[in-house]
Length: 294
Image 1 (cartoon, one colour):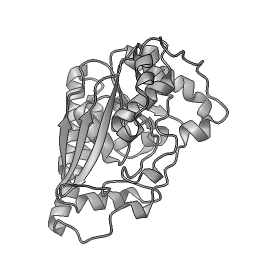
Image 2 (cartoon, helix red, strand yellow; image 1 turned 90 degrees about the vertical axis):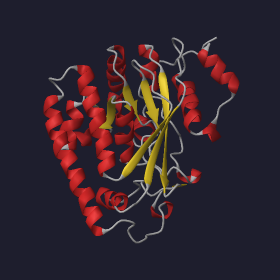
Image 3 (cartoon, rainbow, N blue to C red; image 1 turned 90 degrees about the horizontal axis):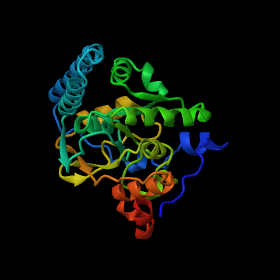
């Protein structure tokens, strides 16, 4: 049996519940301030390297529309990987993203998450509309085919879901962060209360595409750390400076087994199963999993 899908509408509380989730993470979730691990000269070198990669990104943005699709994806993945390296961040991958289209879903800790996901699988991203106006990054995001969402217009949500489904039907993968906001990844009492938002899972159901959960974990000097987290009222520059000053920072992307929803599957159940693959403490009942996959 398969759980029946509900008619897809954006309810009156969609703006609060689906589009503007919030975490309770704040400065207390970050490690205590410490002296930089690397010298000022090394930090300056990293910063110059990152600026160089951003400038390279503007050139890539101009080339992506004319490059063959496979070469464009390879170039985008390479750019993301080298940008991580310029920042002094090492990427480890556990598992392999299946070939072909998929809805890639990941937990959300940092602005580094986007680079890590693109380096593993250069999919089209789902991003808030404001990213489109960011210097350099916005142009690259648009050229890479990012699907932009206007979170001030919650009734546009069904149209956004339809756009993501269309991309999946075209054979391309789409990457989303269904928690909707960053959180530290460690303190369970401050993660977004409703967990994974189910909206974009409807796109996978509608397109008949698999869902691949990606588990992002950060380590600093070999130990789990919230150092790369980007939280609350902190400025992006403050977060970037903390990353530039760190030695031995690693991001691990764990690729879970693909989920293949049956036609008409319940998007909420699918979201819970994907969330449990990334956060095992939220593992749902086995019966629900079997029912969804039947």
